[in-house]
Every structure is written in structure tokens, then in C-alpha cells.
Amino acid sequence: MVIPLLGWLSFIQAGKLVERMASVLGWFKGVRMDLGQAPAEELNAVYTIIPMSLGVLDGILSAVFVARFIRRLYRNRHGVARINYPEGKVMSGAVGPTILEFIQTAGIPHASVCGGLGRCPTCRVQIARRLAEVDKPSEHEAKALGRISAPNGVRLACQVRPRRDITIVPLLLSTATARDGRLPGGL
Image 1 (cartoon, rainbow, N blue to C red):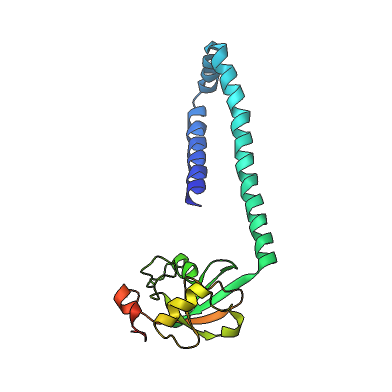
Image 2 (image 1 turned 30 degrees about the vertical axis):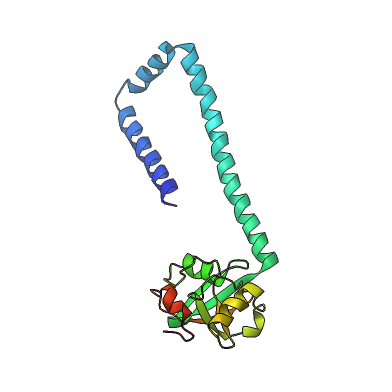
């Protein structure tokens, strides 16, 4: 968003500069004479590049609008999930990412020693509301939760892909280590 804004501001500044220079008598005539003295190859190159650059700009702008349209179609088809986090934080987005990916995208620190591979239970969370809306744990996740004797409602944030609105509570501090993850309870 900042880069296009800076581009437009530069364009406006250049226009003001040309306007000031054009206020001097004979400046525009001198520019036209200089253009007439330029080699034909240079003039042809300039006249060729201008429409091409406008076409590229049109293509980029069109691609942005098409991408936004496709994203809207995807969200309408697959839905939007909202995750309520403690302290009133709410994350929402298209259905598909894991709880851990939602949390990381929101920039909230959360423990995850194995990097979201489901090998350790450090990213575990308590699903406080709408547990029935969440798919059952996979065999891989169930083994990880079984190693720590996790109670019902505790899930690995890196393995759960919510399809509906849920409320979660992290069970470990964001600075938790692999050793902390092996403990049955939260910190």
C-alpha cells in the first residue's frame, strides 16, 4: 500500500516541477526542439515503451482485482473461521489453516518446539467452546496427546483446522521448551 502511494506522490511532484519549468517563456519550445534533434531510434523506443508500460500497469491492476475476486469466492465457498483467544483477541480468516497458523499470522507468541509438525505437545490448547465443531484427533495427534495423558478438549494447535468459530486457551507459556511439553498439565 505504501509503495503505490509513494509512486503517486512522486508522479505529482514531477508534474509540479514540469509546471514550474513550463512557466518560463520558451521552455516548452526548447523541449520540442530537443526532441526533434533526438535520433529516430531513441524516439521510437520511447514511443514503444510508453504503451507497453501502460499495458503492464493495466495487467498488474487487473491481476490484483482478479486475485481479490478469487479470494472472495474461496471464502464464500469454504467459509470463514473465527478463533477467540484470551484477553479478547479474535483471529479470523478463511477455513484451512491450523489454529497455530492463525495464531502465528496474528503475531501472537505461542509455544511450538517442533515447528508445527505435531511431534511435541508444546502447542497444545484447551478448546473452551464448540469442541464438537472440531474434527476428531488424527492417529498422529492422538499419540502425542496420549503421551501426556491430555484431558478431553485439549488439542494440538498445529493439527486442528477449525471450520467454525471456536474459543481456545493456550496451556503453556509461549516460552515453553520441549521439557515443559512433556509435562501432563499446563504451566
